[in-house]
Image (cartoon, rainbow, N blue to C red; front, top):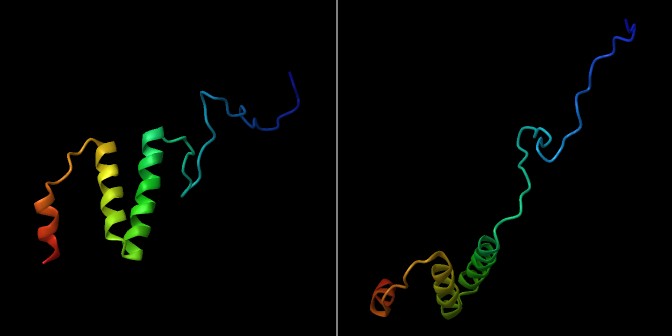
Amino acid sequence: MNPDRTGSKGMDPTRAHPPDLGPGEFAMVDPPPRAAVVASLAETLTRAVALGDEMAARVVHEAIGRLLGVAPAPEGRASSRRR
């Protein structure tokens, strides 16, 4: 018998067994390339709107829609919102 009765600390994390996350912690994963581009464009859209650059906001909005597979709105529909 082994007289040493110290508790087991368990195994070190492996690729198959990631470390446990504490409360409020998120696992870091690489986003898909398209998701990263959409996130970057969303930041650019936010800046364009904040600066009042309507044309840039429209172009970026359309690019985001195309990346997500959404058809752009007809031209007449977008201008009717300005009333």
